[in-house]
Image (cartoon, rainbow, N blue to C red; front, side):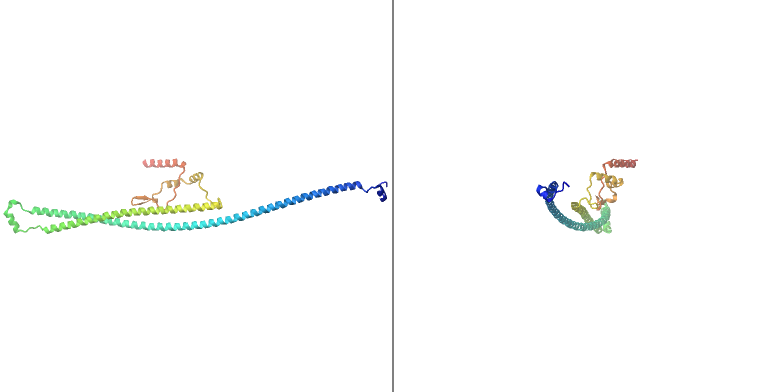
Length: 329
């Protein structure tokens, strides 16, 4: 009980109960309060940083939202522009197709009428040639008749040695040769010659007309081919424009994107194409060519020739040489 003190003892001796522990406790409390203050400072700093970060995040989020909205607006504009351009291109393509189709139909009808006129002119020319041959035969016949009558007339004249007896015979017997018949034959011969000259002139005019018709026919064919080539060029140009617009909006779409053919792809395509098609592309069939008044022209609907691969050329040359050798043997 020596460590037990009363209040008086404590007041006299100025001792406090548990002073050492109290000091330690105060130190701990001070350290705890300091730690709490530090924690509070750190928490305030963290809160400030969090607020700043949140503000930055809000700003960036608003910027991203604005950019997304702008991109959406621009994409809708581009899509609407693409749709309008596709519509315009399709309408212009339809108009061009209708225009060139009407022009091709008119050219075909004019070509058909020119063909009919040419056949009629050829028939008339052949008939006129037959008539000319008959007229020439008739002219020869009339000339022979006239010569025969003239010879007969000359042969019927008496010789001078007979003298008065022949004069008396002429007085007794009238001349048997009719001069009017010779004149009529000469008139008929002149008329036939005139008809022959007229027919020859008509034939010359018809030949000139046939030549002019042939020139017009070739010109119409050239116009037809130029119209067809213009239509194909316009279609290819419109397709290229549409593909460019599609590639600008959505590049390399799985179903609609068509990449350009490189050399490797061309070689693969040429290797995949059979030899028969390549040979038929190089040597077209006779049914694919028709002639117009002696001049060859290509058909209206021609396929694009397949370019053979360089590795196929020796095989083609070898096959052609073997065919030539077989034909010679």
